[in-house]
Image (tube, rainbow, N blue to C red; front, side):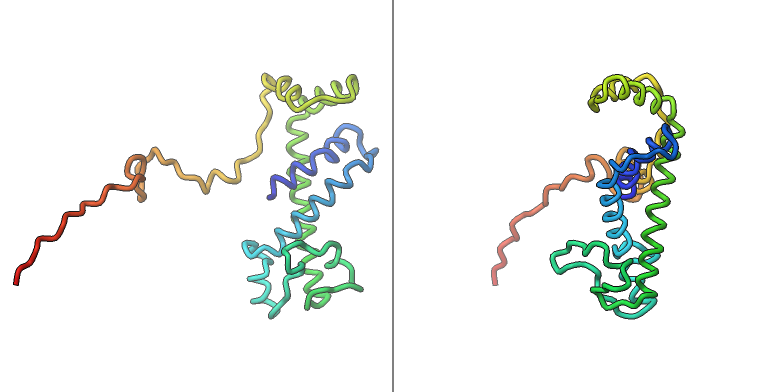
Length: 189
């Protein structure tokens, strides 16, 4: 989810890197996506810092701030006049701080990625200023030989190499073995 936020930051951050403070408002939809993902990450039970599981341990029972359908209620946590869930302003402030932290961290990752690949960004900017539109395939074709600096792989520590021996059975051992079932001998009394 964090990398989705980094990608969504890409357009606005690229404008900032290339044009400075003269940023258009074309990234409004991206900011809404970023905020929605960050809100979901904040209330996720997997968030050990502030997920609802750990939050209930800190401040007591808190209603999940979303609708019963699972859709997040937008713009409710930071508006002190509308608190749909059973939470105090202090808890709402905790949510807002954590949400802001996620947004700032992913924006910093996007900025670092763009500045590390400034040569590619300049080439794409030049192409866009000439043509005003290029496809993803054209971009992919142009950056093939430019050796982009890649992001750190967040998933790699959680992946297994099935070719190596280890505590789990690998390769052919992962397949089900046929059961050795023989009919029981008849017992005569």
